[in-house]
Image (cartoon, rainbow over all chains, first blue to last red; front, top):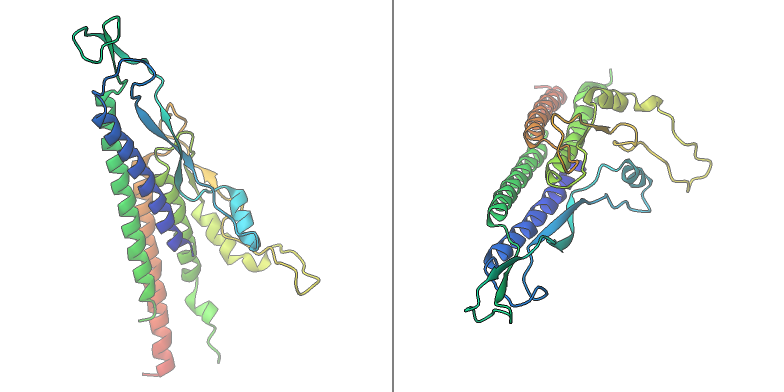
Length: 147
Length: 133
């Protein structure tokens, strides 16, 4: 029954948004983590969302057709990429982490971008919770059929 | 005189099935609101319901052996899913408008409850006819 599939769909959305929120927290926490070389510096991390395709049961012919129709069954995080934006290089010769030329490297984390990402993630999470709530109400209604 | 349960329940049980199918589709759209390149999809409710009602006359595979698997008629065939026309293009190719989807989902849930209420009253009518009160 497709109403119970909604729980899986909304659940996958909630878990994906949680991963996104996690990367935002990690980026903001490390926004000021300095280092003395380009390779060691923290880079902003972002999740990549892709559509989760329905996994058809090979013994069930109908589900194979549903898979072919490509309606999808939720969202998944296919990977987390590090931002390739240039690092923030600052001349601070007194800094204990400064390299021999007097430069320290700050992560390429954009705090404003991260904050908007956080708001977007929490709103999407709320939407998913509402979807799940509605589905729950509908299923509970159906259980009272004929009473 | 025999009571035909299929005729007594009318259109409502089919409508309920199509509504729950559509709820899943809309939930899928909303969940993928942040997925780059995702295209919002929907079904034509009227066409879908008609197809559900006409499914007796639908083409089906002929089974010449008892162990043949029937192709059946899954609710969402390949042809019926359509793409929503985006109101505004987005740079990542995503066509989900969260507000539109939320409104459609709420509407769909309300119509589901309407169909359910109608179905419930039909069943209640039948059971009071059976009891003869």
